[in-house]
Image 1 (cartoon, rainbow, N blue to C red):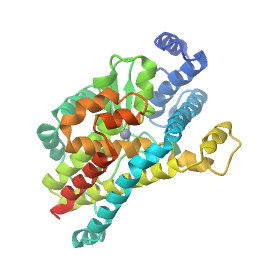
Image 2: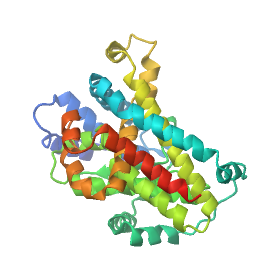
Image 3: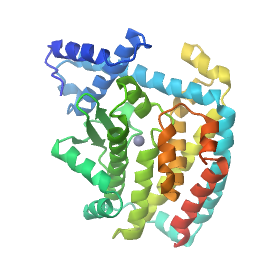
Length: 365
Ligand SMILES: [Zn+2]
């Protein structure tokens, strides 16, 4: 951890050496923004409370810089998304409407109306379901989990903050030391908390596996702003929820978690389609900060493509695990429709897998 005692020489040295890792096409100012935001995240998440920081000004400054960076990555992503918005709409519209229709039917089943009326009781899940899942389905995650624990890098969210309210968990990769930090928000629904853990471990596994030989800037871009940066995490998240629905002791809680998982990702698909309907000019004006009407829309929806595509591709890969090698080839590249289609990731195939998987999951109920 960085010392926060007021002597920042170590920080300055560290930042200077990181700067040399960047590729030369970026301005020094941009490089600095990215590096400081990494530190912002590290400090932000590991101190017990903001009030306990020894240098609150530094903390506040880093959070500000971090937010600017996060926004600019989202805008960068949005900009590329909007450039191809017709294609995105074409790819996602069917997936959304077909799944939404099936979802509606399932929610009307007697099982679900009964479940939704249950009071929110405390869920005393046993952690053994997690290890059973690792053993049966994802030994690669168990290894990562054991490493995170052994290095004492599993944390609860240290304090509640507006910036974190939409996150159930956060993964942060310390590229300098090639190790992962995982943060979880406490939740009375333990199965749900295990699910967030599995999601973050999915990020950790992906980072470790793919980013080791990439330049620093590229690593950061692909983990935070790339269109496919949520595929691995959602892939494992869904796999775990499905496993719980079949194997957990508390089947009611497991089922409710699975249905609310689908509910939230259907919403991400919907948000992504709405984003593709934003006028091209809106983004440009919003970046210039003098356009109000659609700005809030962009802010609210900026990250939805990452989750919408994560969900879509996770389902495709759960249905067709043999297609993983093809996916890995374009995972970190910029969006290219022709490459997707050439590799079999067509609109029909993606939609079919999504709906088929959903119906398989709920057929038995
Ligand atoms: Zn994630």
